Length: 337
Image 1 (cartoon, rainbow, N blue to C red):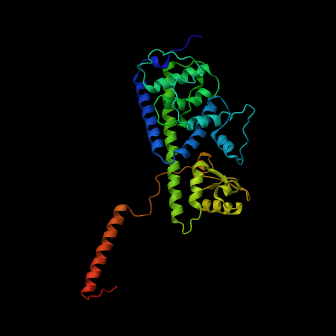
Image 2 (cartoon, one colour):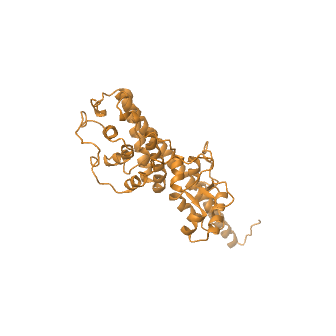
Image 3 (cartoon, rainbow, N blue to C red):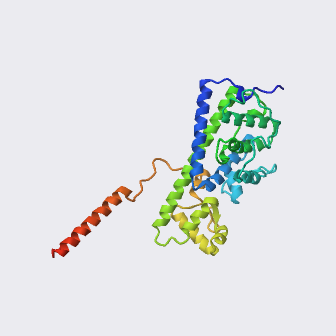
């Protein structure tokens, strides 16, 4: 079969140009936010579950992100059957996660499953189109899950992102057979880049909002105890039970269970096992992903604390009143309350 026309050689149309612009902007927004966020490790873990699920779908595996989260966290979700694992669908995850977190100074051409020769239009093609061409060629050369998982690394190595963004594992099953019209395929891929980037940004927003709510709730407690420590642990270990939490905090299993119950009452964790003993808890953003609680709707609640400008005005007013009070006392004039 003759090789299909390279994606770098396709003639540009207004529709393709718009799709490239939207995809590039969405990818840049996500990379900028993730790079600046203090919650990047927690987000990257969650995004890796999303990206790996997308790659499994492209391999036509009947496994959802819910199943990956449950597998990685050692959970048995009530009412959900265990996925079939005869073909070891999770075997590539650990190695991929290690590659994502490593500082990568390698050239983008290293590790390609084909011999690279610059295709037509390579020199003038935008960087994102070059990355999609490499994905397209790798998908035809390698029928495993590897080409889909490699795309976040390709984006980083080509300088399109500062960090590897796990949620950008993507592709089209038709790339394996080169049956779809090439302009249609390119537009689908660009749309997928945009959607994955926007979904990744939504997940970061949700994680940051949950973290702010947890910090506010903890600060409002008269005796927070180890609630703040639990919040920090849940960022990178969002699925917990009393047995797994106790050694992390240096407390008894009974104490860890009471701490998790307290955190659940404050909305910092969500209990998902439905058992009276040996309960399992997840962070609120994971509970939303698992569809065990609805996503937040509408505008976020207005903070009850006064705005900084109002606080400054009230402090100035109090200081001025205290000064007037002091002057009146020096003059021997009392003030009736």
